[in-house]
Length: 209
Image (tube, rainbow, N blue to C red):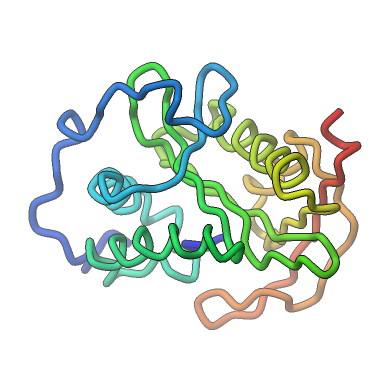
């Protein structure tokens, strides 16, 4: 799911859209989930420019951990991702959410559920937040809301998060959100040609009570 599983050098972009022109004050009805400060909703084509800008500006941080975040990442890649979100949702294969500031409509990042296994009732959860908006609790809140969606709406039993051992910031998000660290999976993730050990975290419904 767009990296869950996003060096700006070489990025294919000539005229990024000014951030001030990308914001539209959201309607409360747009959000599937909200904590009063951020809201989660499905992606639409209007998200392509702000999503691309957020990725472009966050590329130095994202490229270390997201397999899709690379120097050649383009606006066309963003559009392809967004166009796949709707069908993926309808087929029950993945659920990608845009994270939006409910007060001013700013695009903050993305959280989502992928690798949905209906037979055993679990899915993978991943997240990323615009580099300018980290350390404000955005990822933590979005993670909890997405996990709650998996239990209340999708009726899953379990949500898993795989985090590379060097990615301490993402581990902190998982722990602050209330996920439980269960163990270490050796050489579980391949990132930039290097096999990384990964911690596996999980939520079950009782963790959110």
